[in-house]
View (tube, rainbow, N blue to C red):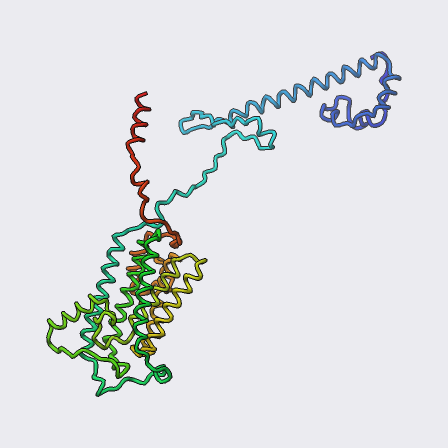
Length: 416
């Protein structure tokens, strides 16, 4: 103003290449003065120079403020365009604006203009995974009964074709060569079988899912006796010992054959009931089937910690099987085949049931002829059957509770 302007110290004045009227952005980018230099400069300046510098600073500040205001106003004018969408007809439809809570900033969440919803697919609650379906159990009960009746018919037919022991002696058997016959041994076998079956049905009485297990038992029992009918009919073996007494042949007397069938059914096919007087049902042993199958079911559906219970049932089954051979009532091959057929069918079926592979065509286990029956039985059983027991009959005090008391309490509440 009054005199010539002094040159500014190094680091705060304009460069020689830049004019005085440089842009505010460049002035703002200049490095600031240190505290000592600023104090020295303020002391050496004249008042007119201070006023001139102040006016220049105010002008540059005013220019920067105006430019910043224009930029912010342009951003504000752009924001509605981003928030508003143009529809097909040109109408602007405002998008929902997210109002962040007070805790969002504290927790470091990003503030969003829209509600970010994440759809989580929840698995719908399933129904009963172990339905009773007693009607299926009833069907399998009749299936097992029909197989047993068919077995008695086949025994009656085969008995007429068994060669007499006088003309064809018993076949050589290695076990018989080393172990002499014990007369009472077969009685032990049948008593053990009766005890095992009684224990099994008593266990079923307290089992919570008895309908599922019963139809499995009936199906396997009926299928095994169907197999036995086939093997008995296609291969007729001579009697295993000269001690065996067979009933006389009836030839064409159908009525007498029918009476024998009824007698065999009424006596459950046991020798201790004097109902089994026919021969020819050797391959394979039906007594072995009952002893082993019943033991496998007892062990499968009882608690794993009941080792003493499993051991007791195993001893009953094993002693019964051995006594069949000791009594010379079956060939050794009859017992061995019965063991392998029974155990493999049981394990086969339960492997499919516990792994839920009834619909898997890549599993070779599903190639069995009875696979459609298996699918019918197990299609609604979606989990392995747990070993859960309970009292099947409601206690008397629970049965005698008066339901009218609760009803009167509800009715009085409504009246009030």
